[in-house]
Figure (spheres, one colour):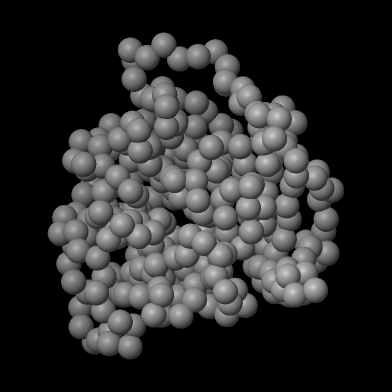
Length: 323
């Protein structure tokens, strides 16, 4: 699950493969405004990442090599812009900014880091993957057991973690084509390695305004770092190992606190600045009368097998445009 940059929409992926969009401008009465599926088979949607500029959202599964890109804006009806096909199943995915362009930064199932440019406007041919002339996919070998990519507009650096429990910093972006990877050579070593969660890192979030990188782990810790100086860190023991540790974390972009959810089903709100006067309740969003999301119809949730497939939506839109 992830939220739009303006806080008006929530994007949800389910274990059965449903992609759901909710209008949450009225926090007490969320409305389902869009539902679809990207795959014919039942596979989970594990990754939903929204860009901080409010333009696009990326969706993928650990059981697929495809990244679907949708508009993040209700004024564009959250339309599908296109998709990118990577060179392995996507274990983890993040946004990165390189040469001023948005890229998908991924850790793949074949122990590769791969980056690819993603579209920010609707493509002419959305039924086929974006050509490499556009995506300019580049790779780098990683250590075995790598499974999480951490990246943000806060820093051009890429961070990877995995089964060896270190947070690894790469200053230089991948530069090799997939066809030129020498699988016999050892991976290039990272520029720096940092102490990380003692069992496994499960989630992370960035705050652009507060300049914070927050990670959660199976050890029950939430670690708050300065992304410009990763060694500066403070940890919070929110959960324990027995209950499965941290499942999800989200750090505020306005006030120094984070939401954290555990595998036991509980949710905590934790302040990270003792001098801050925290509000008693969330601020309500005031919508203009002509707000696009307010004009979208409310939907009844369908069974996943009754939701329209991505390919059927593309065909329907094509037929309407050429009617």
